[in-house]
Image (cartoon, rainbow, N blue to C red):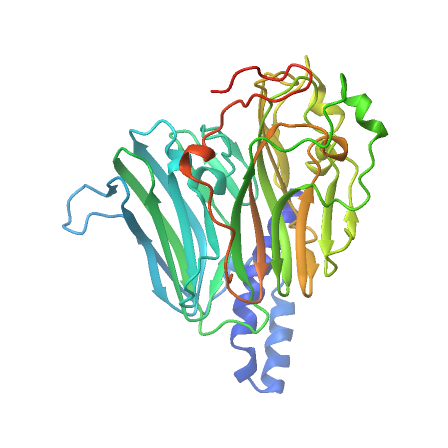
Length: 394
């Protein structure tokens, strides 16, 4: 299975590069090349001649010294990447030394494709890398990971035709002493028509508004109905043609008991009702049975899914990090997509959700919802009704 997943990702990039020059090649030559490719199927792509140029943009010391880092003052913005296309960003690596305790929420990553005035990526750095609760956690997935030494890695392919620009802004009150960056990219002759633009959007709800406070256990909420998902937590909503690739989610509990049972509901080309409906949040993240329960929950991290961090499960103050990618079957849409999930069955719970959603689309984003203020992005327990609800904030 792992080999199949890796092969799928390699195939995606290979198709981008193969299609990029196909239109200019005569049909006979294309057929001849296809036959040669079939004959060499046993030979890995890395052992064949490629038609792109491999490049990197980094924070290296321009003087030739060893100060290979950016320094970012409070309120400052640092450009991390700038290129005229076509190109494909293939890998991002950051490591950060900052005074701010919550710098993973204070630093905001933005990316702009093809000269767009609005970013197609806008999210706190931590949430982008699956660290949605502003703490470092060591884990590995197919597209995102965090290694020892607080190093952050991303392997989403990010194609652009005309240009690409990436920045990070320090919204905190203290300076970032060292922001190390390495961004690997490749330059093909052109991109295929079907190449889509990468998007990543941050959202949060802290706390999620409950549909009922009349419950003592989660089972009491089973009487509630939620056929249309209108009050669900929203990961992202967009218009255009594209495909959903996945989400990362951080949950901070404001109440006792299991924070899950929220069905995933994805609206595809119809705003009135979800086309895809799952069976519970732990099922969506491809775990089960409360990830092991109040006394037996265990963290897990796999290529396409995981709950890489679990602390104080099913208690007020409990913390979860989860992720799910759809690399095996990206969820396609032609006109409209809204990815949602219940917070508890029929939205009866009032926990805090912090998420980043990833998708590809035929055009760069027009406008995202405003990013919440920094003070609201920092995870804190909130006073809410219900069993074990915190009686004081902070």
